[in-house]
Image (cartoon, rainbow, N blue to C red; front, top):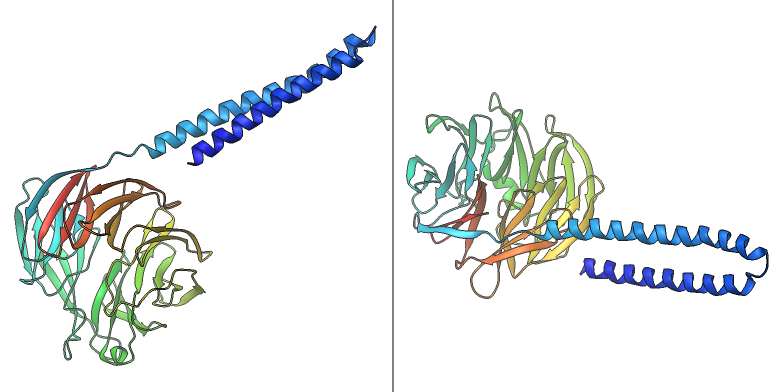
Length: 385
């Protein structure tokens, strides 16, 4: 539509330029008498030449913009190349170390799946949906159920060696004061591991909080509750700090090493019914844009300005999404089977979509040139981009 608007404006400019040239010709003929005719004609060539040059430049710019827009829009819909039952129920997958890692939630196992043969090559004993974060030669994973049971606040942080498929360390999650901590989601780099979760005390206050661990020693260095209570809370980590969005749309940034709060601002996001139970994967960075799920869609945020730069409604809900090849790939629940939708992180513009023929998407990840989508019913779908 933007291309058509530009073309309309270009046609209008060309028509106005042509009309101006006709008018200049009429004026020139009226005043071009005797010896002054040559001087007037020479002077009239200057604005005429400028107008022609402007038109030519407009044509060049239009061609470049329209060509670039066409190339940007030319995104082929991925094709489903495999669909198979992997377990009775599955969590969200992570593509790392040449494999797809996903929790078999019903049996309490973390599966490592070969992307070519689709065979399970390793099984590790875990509990719950298992949030994961690959960093260097370590796969960090949360072990424990969420929401926690009445006496089940003792989560564990696992350090998995992908070379041996062994758990090399199990760190019980406890605050510096000794309170057991149940983890929901995590974000990590080479210096820090941040865990989003709750303690019994925070849970009684309907609150979630953050815990920071030193990535080298697994020592807990900070733990504190977040404002705004229970609901849609998410975290994302990059070089400029740990970012968090609270249930009431407050954007917070913390120093990743010291846990000092660096900034706080309100976001202009659509209100929705708070989730009874929070879910991982609410926010991630896609390029320079902080992308968050919203009721029925996604929103893009310029984080340092705390400015919501776009919103996009995609369906009844958008349970999961990931970034691959410079695009956001999200599953959207509508009436009928889920759809896979691709959008630009800069403006949220949808460029392609495809029916999945599946319900209840649990997670999505990218590995090589493929997208892997898992469902709560234990099915895995592989799409080739």
